Length: 288
Length: 256
Image 1: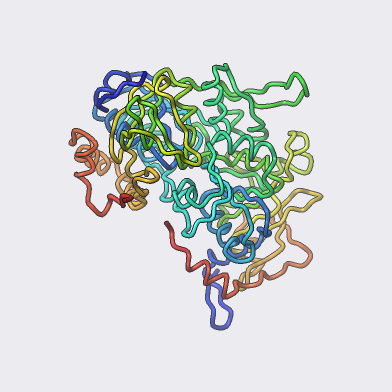
Image 2: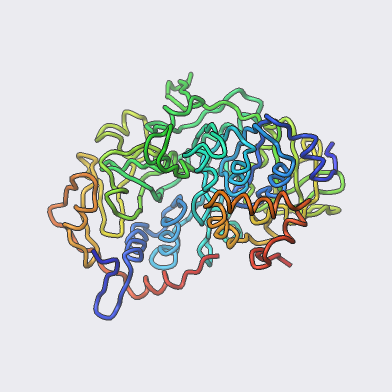
């Protein structure tokens, strides 16, 4: 059964140096607060997994927490590049980082295989691309029924998946809705999961595309209001698009990045303090 | 080379002309998988003008998105809140894209070559890139699984190149038979819309040839801005300039 705990304790107990960690989220519900806590606790040698690594992965990489990244699209959505990620790949700063690169369809297939307890997944993909030649985890299989050649990717099996969701109930069941990305698959493919929720409620309202994760497949549940900031939680907050534009400026310069991280992440004790440390104009809007 | 066009009293930028020309490629009622950036603006312009019944699908899982403001990213709330359905990301790539339910894939690119192959991965060597680009995202399977593909990007010798540094998404490979031998199902890229003109795929050679220049652009400008010896259609037409409605609609878009 899921355990209610504090974010600091969840990260301390379940994210270890050298772990494979997936902080998933597809624009919506990105677990920024957990990424910041991993940085505060100085985790090292992580293999980070994510379809769409964005600012929080830029911060983890720039702070030297990761030695490998498994991904399919690395950018600052709607704003530009991930400059700390690029500095690591292009200039080995702060140190070199190994990359394992897929397409979105390939990553989604790997998570589905992991969630399904299969060793690999198949897709009609990658044919004719150079991805197939530079990524050793893309291979080819022949369909035993039609003889068609299909791509195969190994199951993704992170040590820990960390996601955000809108709500948990008092038993630790979790629900999320809106753009739910690959979060369900990330939780079910991982050995342990940590779920950040906006609030705990007595009962869930049915949502048109709500995903419910039963308490017994959830590890830790942590209440962190606006834990996805500057991403958003549909029904609770809007995406702070101006933070993404702001990050383009901060992340461009190594020293400016370090100063910013010292002040706003290392210099704050939790997500509430982090939010309070920001210029109010960067905070975006909260739904009533 | 001017970065604006003009037609009597109306003036537009070359980017606006590109977006308008790209929007016109979408026919009403078609089902379109929309890439991030320029394609999203063009697809929403089409929906707001001549193609009100176009079905816009975003890789974040939004099917039939009808945003009132332009999404600032591919997973904005304006997409999920206006969609007919929102499905998980593995589902959008399997039941919807891979199964062949999409008519048009609409993609941007950092670089393309004469066969419509796309690079969004690196400039330079993969192992020690000069510029690390975002990578593949959904594009490789969009490029292979949709019935056809439209590409839009700004035209320059650095973007329209003789040889790609990396093939992220395959167009027509190395020529006419490549898609067939790779077992790809869709027809691949059929048009490349740039800020200077329109290139279309020659059905015999699979090479992209210049069929249109935008008003005020010379063929010689396009040839100079293309990194391969650009072939031209027998008659290169001038793209009709943006209409008042197209320009007004495009300019009324605000980002969410």
